[in-house]
Length: 155
Image (cartoon, rainbow, N blue to C red; front, top):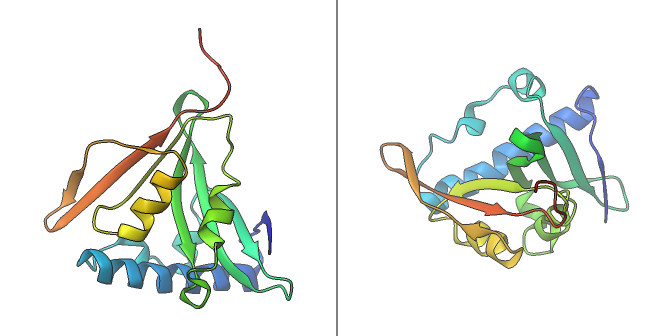
């Protein structure tokens, strides 16, 4: 398995990413008891229009097993927008492999459904500190996480 940039201008890549995202978010919706996750309703065109950096975990035969997308945040930080693994690839270390490619020298933030135990455990295992939970919509509780970059950028 290798991590490589994904070009969503490529129709086949974009279609695979869209399919994987929907499948992964459907599993999360079940875990957290909330089916209003915006990415579940996002069209292919809307997904492609996101100003994100996309990387994928690609198998030896070229299959995209999962992806990670982030946006550059304030003061040089990174805000992870989505981490999705094709359910056929669950429990094989794909999400860990992807998180290992988040820039380590930058502050990183991410949110997930507070009841998404696998994602919460993953972020904690990668040294993310849990911040305050919040509720952006009725019936939805989100957990926020952050991790400081490994190099000093400010004095």
